[in-house]
Amino acid sequence: MIAAYTGAQVRDAEAPFLARGEGPALMRRAAHGLALACAERLRARRGRVAGARVVVLAGTGNNGGDGLWAGAELARRGASVLAVAVGDRLHPEGAAALAAAGGRVLPLADAPEGEGPARVLAADLVLDAVLGTGARGGLRGAAADLVRAVLERWPERDAPLVVACDVPSGVSADTGTVAGPVLPADLTVSFGGAKAGLLLPPGDRSCGEVRTVRIGIEDALPDPALRRLEPGDVAALWPRPGAASHKYSRGVVGVVAGSPTYPGAAVMCTRAAVDAGAGMVRHLGDAATRSLVCLTSPEVVASEDHPADVHVQAWVVGPGAVGDPAQESRIGAVLAGGLPAVVDAGALTAAARAAAEGGLGPGKVLTPHAGELEQVLAWLAALRGDADAPDRAAIEAEPARWARAAAEATGAVVVLKGATTLVAAPDGTLLSQADGSPWLATAGSGDTLAGIMGAALAGCAEDPDAFAAAGDWARGDARLAVAAALAVAVHGYASRLDGLGPVPPTVLAGNVRRVLRSRA
Image 1 (cartoon, helix red, strand yellow):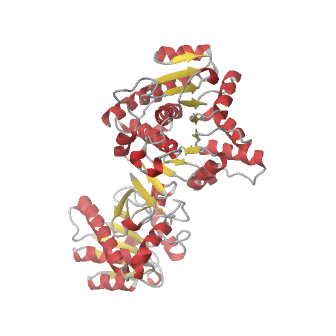
Image 2: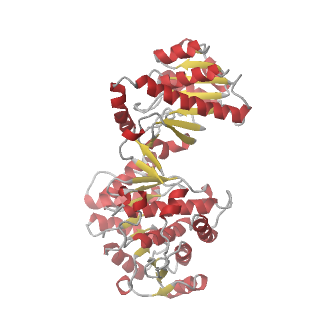
Image 3: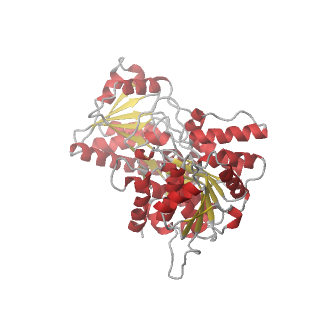
């Protein structure tokens, strides 16, 4: 599991070390790890470090100092290192170390027009060490102009490697928001602990691979601001039957999905719940849709019952369930009830109304994409008489902020779907998953995810400690967020199982079985 922290959390953990005069030692450890990562990339690209052209974009603070010390180490390994000073000064000790190792400095303010961008574009490796975790806002002035000029001329092939020091300059270490131009990194080397902004959109798209270097403060870090599940976590946490399990104890998923207009949504959702290992899947819907569901998944028990008439551990409501009064009635009953439920697509507006009126029952997991979250927040604002709600562009600029706001406003877990999917719980728990293929952006993919998530919810619904192996933070109500993140991860792994390419949702569900078997 990847744990990520805000810049303030890391600075607070560093404070006692700095008070004891250990700041230079922390910087040297960070710079050494950064230099090793750069050397590794240079050897992979060109076979050796010696003779490589390295440009350090050096800011005025400690981030610039880290870059200068790393540049000094690369210079001692035979690289030609040039530090482009983007401000009016350099970190004194770092600059002295670079000079002693034979590196050179180019003050950007004194350089002829065009020389700075030309030097960057001619490099084998560019080390971005302008802004660190304490920065507010993006690049400004000469530094911003330099990056804009470089990006305008960035080659499609044989471009320099870019390694970011702690965070790419212009990406918020805390929120992942982006201000101004950003030089996208191939690798970001973070110190002490990964920064939350490196795992949050939209900034995560500028970070490349994220690597963390230990510098000695790790035991002083608090609970992380953000977590990301990895394949080993899925293997350890996914609900699995034991020798004494039976179909009811493993979790019964009730599915209110499909309508005469959109029957396929019910087919894909129920199939995914079956393939994700639910003990039983019950489908409620119209006769024609039930017939299709049973033809494709004869394991499913289909009926026209009302939710009050069947026994399940968790529900999935909403996929394709529009324009059908009977389905709308079933959705309303599930939303008001006390069982966990995945609330998707056609049920999201009803959930927003229920939340605004205080009628949304506990344990609900809302699964909007950015456009749907805009509608949910607009409904909440209108019904509560709040200030204007954010539009889609605002949500996409600060998705973590708005996912958390929606979780707080509704009392539900909010799964904000996207290339990076965020899972926000009312208690502040936040997870970020970026496991899926871009080919998941297709009709029916969300229906499949809802079914997988329903199986995960049903498997943990009656056990508050189902995910205790992840830590105390995952107990109790937080398990619903863990179940949602597990489903997002499995959905993503299934999309990449056979490489990158089209993955129709009807194939995706079958891939889920293979993913879970491979991680048994």
